[in-house]
Length: 285
Ligand code: GUN
Image 1 (tube, protein in one colour):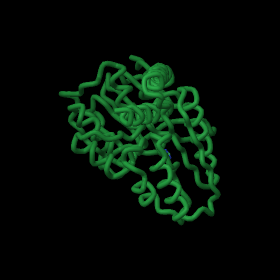
Image 2 (tube, protein in one colour; image 1 turned 60 degrees about the vertical axis):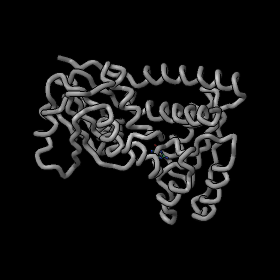
Image 3 (cartoon, helix red, strand yellow; image 1 turned 135 degrees about the horizontal axis):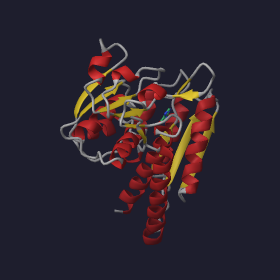
Image 4 (tube, helix red, strand yellow; image 1 turned 60 degrees about the horizontal axis):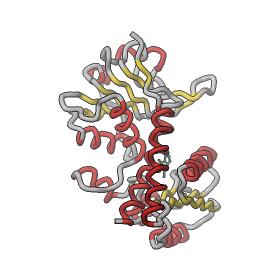
């Protein structure tokens, strides 16, 4: 059996068209244009590409976007002051500070300074807490995108399904587990130190791999027909982009699989647009 591919690019395009239509409606009804501010500190190459793509996606959806780039020498106090200013700027509905930040700046302090009402990354403690207790807040974009991918194959409600998450980062693994629980799945959270990981993943109807290491999930670790979501972004020996999943092997066993590239990657920015849209709609009441 060869798995069906969940095409993140196609799903993203569809969702972005819907967001652009919502933005046009909001503007026509209440004169509000959704606004996203992206802050980049320093010259991390990967971050430069990510923020450029985020700003471009905003423009394509008809959003207002601001990209603020600062030298790596920016002080923490200066950055906190910028975030405060954006918190008070009514043209801005979402604030994203690209991570990683230079070492002399405390990520946590910066994220906690962002108003939860504008935390479209979903990284603030208030957003994580809201997700945990089922209150309204912003969902972290990457796991939110994974949930949309499951929804696209008819798996919005996961009652009776066992989902195994590999990885426990604050921005993917942990919020992913919460979202799967909220969708009624039975959830096991594992990580690179879990003993006999395969024994866990072989029981799973859904596996989400988010470790950041190649070949974390191989064909022998997958139940036939399972859904495999690959959040990894790595390079193989030839320098080619690859995920955490041994794609060629696993696609012969799984029922559905997300490719890398063209899977979860485009969904992250799409969900950032969705969150910013939602934030703008909330201000309109
Ligand atoms: N760095 C890598 N991914 C992300 C993300 O989704 N948001 C932010 N702010 N920084 C990141």
